[in-house]
Image 1 (tube, helix red, strand yellow):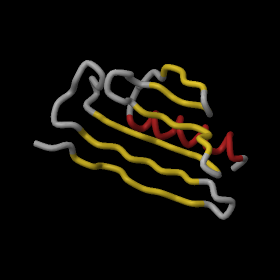
Image 2 (tube, rainbow, N blue to C red; image 1 turned 60 degrees about the vertical axis):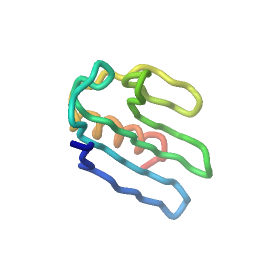
Image 3 (tube, rainbow, N blue to C red; image 1 turned 90 degrees about the vertical axis):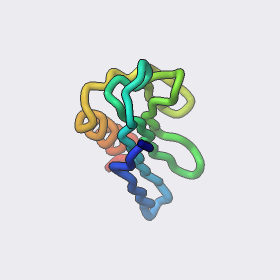
Length: 94
């Protein structure tokens, strides 16, 4: 059974800010993804990352703020999306 896409959207604001969210449900959970989700949530402007949440295999849950990377504590998909949206609003001024 392949991964199932459950969320994919992309918005481009008038100022060029790109917000893209992609979430898959995996056929089985793993040590890196015990919740069974694979995700990439991105916000950037003019080719520069403002914030990106992802759980790349081998790296686990983490968030990028520009070039800095730090661990992220996954609680639920709803919380992940809310945390991302809060960061997008804070970093883009709206």
